[in-house]
Image (spheres, rainbow, N blue to C red):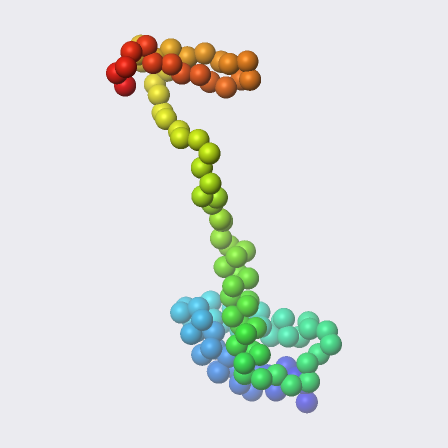
Length: 110
């Protein structure tokens, strides 16, 4: 008997595990399908799969999905940004030799 046939006999259990991980029925179904594909493509084919191995596979697939669909924003901010109306007469501006915009206040008021 194929390992996938044996694996599919516990399909409801895998769906329950995936649902505990994702908290969403549709995502859980997709996760279990991805798990079947990952195990089918594993070389060499495993001879025995434990429930713990399946849970770890489902968990890893879920994490991979989150990483794939998440954009990380760097928290390192090097400069403070101020928005200044360049038409405001309180300020004058110029372009420095290194092409940076330099804004100077004409008075102490801002």
